[in-house]
Length: 148
Length: 148
DNA sequence: AAAAAACTTTACGTTTACGTAAACTTTATC
DNA sequence: GATAAAGTTTACGTAAACGTAAAGTTTTTT
Image (cartoon, rainbow over all chains, first blue to last red; front, side, top):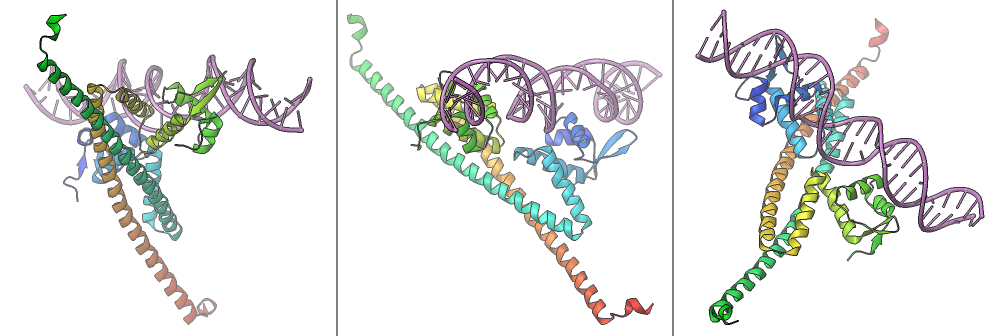
């Protein structure tokens, strides 16, 4: 259970560091389903979880409509007929493949960053060696500028 | 070393399954730098590598301008003054943090998919148990429909 | 109760990453 | 040498994901 039962739009916006505009947009697109007290939106902890999922999805490169599809599919799955369940299992398998691809991409990127960093450090070491040599040269012939 | 020295636009497009429009757009945005024979673009294997990086970046949720910044930064880094080298090391560290975040996101997603899949399978098992019971009932009282 | 703060809808604007079409040139094929 | 194939530029169009502003309502604070 989450700490609280309901949330205002600005509470959620603040907590997840998004604008209220975004939250309203997500509702507009059917990703969140706040109830109303009068005109005012009241978000449940389910909405809160979904907002968290939306944002994680974004960080993982998912579009809002992809995320929405997952939400919808999951909701239908809960209603529980066999076709829906199988469809969900299928979708899950596909997503797993995507995640595998992403893990590969990340691993590759990390390797390349390792070599990039190594090269940087080598180049830096080179530069600093040069510097030290120059300083040494200065100390050994400090009058070299005056002599002309 | 890559197999070939130069590539036409459609060769690259085909190899990486993007449109020529996209490739031209990437050039337009300064991410690729083909030379020309007359009007025609000629891509080097460096361009090919960069195209690969662009696409991987996209899969990882990077925008084109983020990727371009990295490219530019790297090019300047190669020219090798100290400030650039330190800046690059800094940037690399930041990117590593991003990757860590993404790995966390993926791990979370995988866990949730595990539990989702488990629930699906349970629900399926339930449904199939019911089904079997119904069939059993039919066999034991096959005349139940006729008797009325 | 007056002012400030938070919320609402409506609607036009903006950026990113291309799609699509037109009109033209260059290169390859028959 | 005609024609098809591949390439080019120019330019308008589009979907996604909000930003921003206006104009009004509701709630809270003083």
